[in-house]
Length: 174
Ligand code: RP5
Image 1 (tube, rainbow, N blue to C red):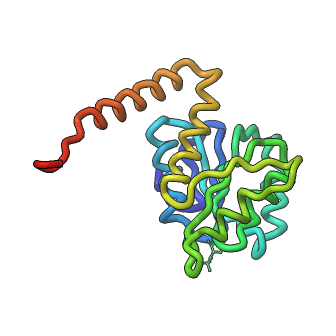
Image 2: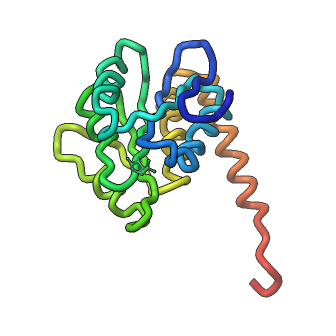
Image 3: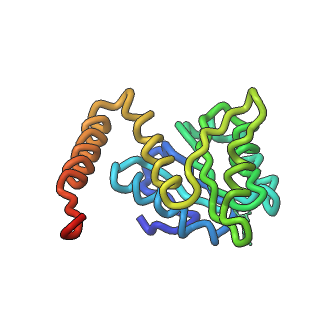
């Protein structure tokens, strides 16, 4: 796929929606796209700004179930209300990715995503690239519960990581 905002991985039914508040979030959110590409999970990526495109955000959340989305990965920075608002609009699970911000380095994004009041959950991941990649890995893990082929891919991915860690060498004297 083209791996840029407002893209879709394939014509088959999109399983995972990746949305972000700005094209400036792409450098972080592209790591979620890369994981889903690697596992062959059908996805789309779009800019859906909560405060600049509120009606688009409402439509995206309201249509998520009908469109068959299995999860929404939502990244935003600063007063990051996009994941929480989407979670309010749909029962589809929402995974929040705090994008690093200019002045508070993403601590503002993290706190505004993670501190959802009881009743409307957002599964919140780490600030930045690791959070984006892990949100996608978590989506893969959920799909793998009912998809044996995907589970095998996930197990192979974990095994490769284990081997890479075992092969790590330290500098002399370390
Ligand atoms: C948020 O404001 C976006 O998620 C982004 O992280 C941040 C800054 O947006 P831009 O000013 O770069 O468009 O809505």
